[in-house]
Image (cartoon, rainbow, N blue to C red; front, side, top):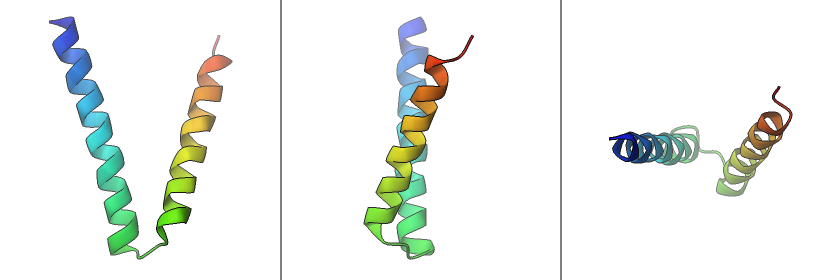
Length: 54
């Protein structure tokens, strides 16, 4: 049961990421390189924040 919840959470996370990129690139018409760079930067900051979490 825990594995199913983990996989569901990962699937939902990737759906949000890909959906957000599609919205950013097609609705707001931002360049793909800027959108992907912003995503990678946000992910790196997130990982860095978890490293220093108490």
